[in-house]
Image (cartoon, protein in one colour):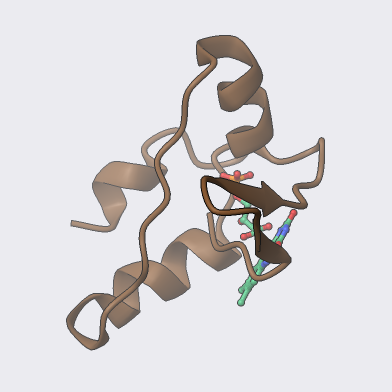
Length: 66
Ligand SMILES: Cc1cc2nc3c(=O)[nH]c(=O)nc-3n(C[C@H](O)[C@H](O)[C@H](O)COP(=O)(O)O)c2cc1C
């Protein structure tokens, strides 16, 4: 997913404001881990896709990004 409502907290922590309805939120609660990365110009289409399509509705969301 895309996350814009974010920030840095102290020197070693980050803040993410995530809707509980997102598949990403459910996956974090399930697996107790997550990855954060910054999108690049080269990846703009994939970055756009993950922000407008939900894993709740499209099972192969990540594969679709290529
Ligand atoms: C530019 C952009 C920023 C977004 N920022 C947030 C955010 O900070 N928090 C949030 O809960 N959703 C945010 N969203 C919405 C999710 O990225 C979007 O609903 C996504 O499809 C959720 O995917 P998932 O259900 O597979 O986790 C943002 C979307 C876009 C396009």
